[in-house]
Image 1 (tube, rainbow, N blue to C red):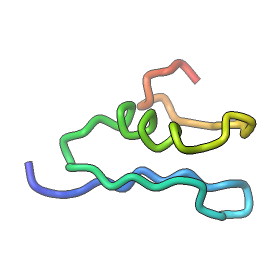
Image 2 (image 1 turned 90 degrees about the vertical axis):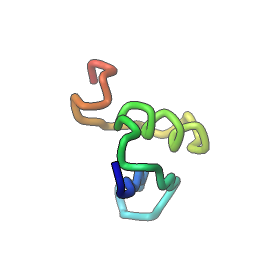
Image 3 (image 1 turned 45 degrees about the vertical axis):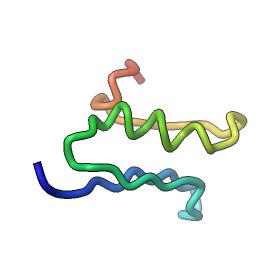
Image 4 (image 1 turned 135 degrees about the vertical axis):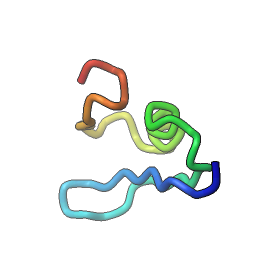
Length: 55
């Protein structure tokens, strides 16, 4: 499959905290895990059900 996905983490004011560009066939859950590895764990994270974490 051709294409790209952009996995982006921002704070409540829209400042970018992390970005990962992946091939389109990478799951959203994997993309979220990869991009969140570089974000300080002291932040609160909201995600939709596609992440598969039950949040």
